[in-house]
Image 1: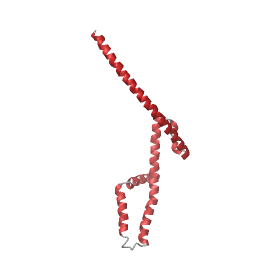
Image 2: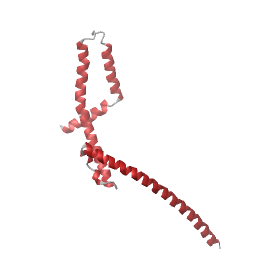
Image 3: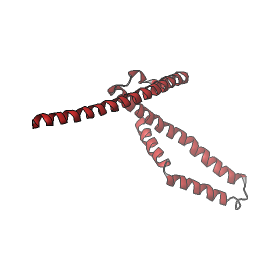
Image 4: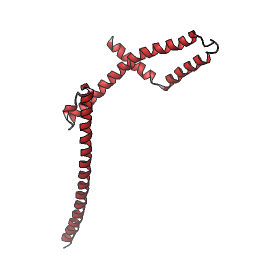
Length: 152
């Protein structure tokens, strides 16, 4: 039963997100609005759109929440795999279970580290470029020296 609902939720989520479905819903609302004068803008006329949209919204909340929860779990599993197979810190695995304050604190720490790492990486890049320039300069001198030795 769970697997059946999961497939239904995925298909419905994909279907509901298509532009043609939005246009269809918009057409229904326009037709309903145009029928207002024919029904003298009665309470029944208003009740039709209110009831229809309420029922659809109520059911779609559960369907979309199920699809979003599964997508989030899949993304977390993929990110955890990337963390485990990289040089990243394993302490980030499972942080989606932290409370709001802990997440904010961790976000601040990561932002500080990224800012510091950016400056460090910029320095490393500049140093690497200088070293590469020195190597090229030394290589040319060696190349000339080697040719001169061979010619002699």
